[in-house]
Length: 251
Length: 258
Image 1 (cartoon, rainbow over the protein chains, first blue to last red):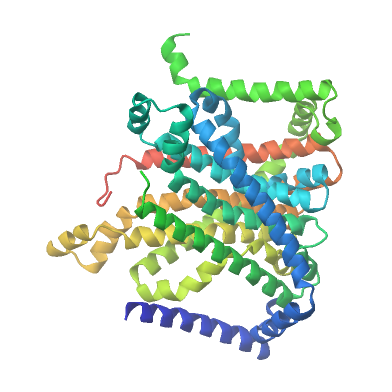
Image 2: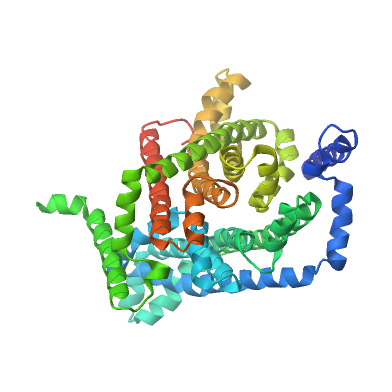
């Protein structure tokens, strides 16, 4: 009953919105150039699927996302664990790290474009910087919150540094790490799109800015919805993993 | 200096030390010709530019433009986000009706719509404010909503048995108890609003810190660009510190449900 009511109300709201969006321009109440219409967005979606070279642009964007995000995971987690467990190092790197964490990394886009050019490299860098910060910060927090008694107990039973790292620090900080990864997904996707909008030769963001500047709102919307759907799916998957891990904690 | 003094400002010393270390390494790497100053500039050149931009008033002007845009966008998002969050937390139907739209503002890269904003609002502050607003809104809304929804039900039952009406429960129990969640939402969305301001200035403005970063970047004037970039960093730190101070003041309150 409860979920039924929820689905009903949500879809009714969306239906009303779509109808208003469809008919208000037809009645001449709003300017169709600015809003487009659901019917033409639908037609455009089919057109994009068939002959807008979607495969190529999606491939470029996806590769930038995977490369930047993959690097962020592969580098961010070990760095976070090291900074989290070595106090001396943490006190030295913490201030610049926090400063970098508090600024919008997308502000680095112009300088990255100068350094790395207009190809995929500058986008990969901005995705990496966007995603790596929440991963490092959350991993550090996860390692620091790992129960110190477990480490002491393991040490007194003769565990080496490597043992403690693999058996205790890594599994103990896993939920925090996954949360960092989830937060990183959103930043990474925004990084791909904004990076490509700023300067690129191909990609979804490139298409968005191309159609946007000629006010093709229908094309703009289809590409934006595509990104939104991708982001939603990935974030939901990460959240499910997170919930799964928080009920089943290895430690 | 006494040990207590040292202990108190320990974090500050480490911060100073690490920033000095970065600056020295950077200057040294450029002097030793390891890296090209055209791309990275050097601390001494950045310092000269900071002085130049301070005395010409350029830095202050860009900073205050971005700050005003941020405050208006964030303020509007705070008002609407808290209002909608409270409404949706109190009335289930409102929550369900808003859900799909909030999901869209969360997941979609809203900056994609900047041409629309520029066409309607023009190049400049109104466009930047609109985008900052949209960036900040969903987190404030979502946190307020869950704050209202997760109010301790024992409190509500107790208030009811002492004769409180729905209105009393709302004003005296639900609202104060959800304060900490609301503040957490504000904290999350400060970063998002700042990102919105900078990114919107990069694409759709003719002034502000984000604009000057792009402007100098395109002219390869790295030192000038770094001044604006450092100002953005300072902006982020300033906002986070302000909110932390605000939260510390909130702490005295021992509201029900916390």
